[in-house]
Image (cartoon, one colour):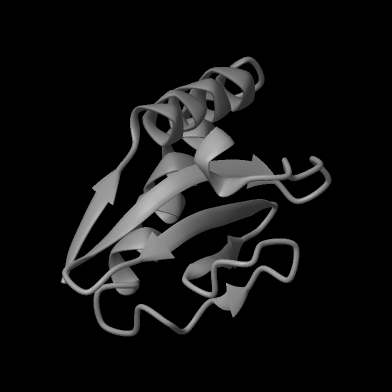
Length: 98
């Protein structure tokens, strides 16, 4: 299964990098690598993440790469990373708004 990233998810990854890089560029790169690696693992077990109760769509799920949540949608042929959020950030009401 292929892992794809939405434009919003790519933007969020860049924002995370820039925020962490204010304190440490090596730590920022390491954090981004951890998030990317965690997302790639989904190819082996796409439904391993927890279903998000807030959404009716059973295929919207999340996995954690602390302190971030990787929110994704599983389809028959791919895994679409919708966004990456800090675990304390509020989720929106509809996954299409990510």
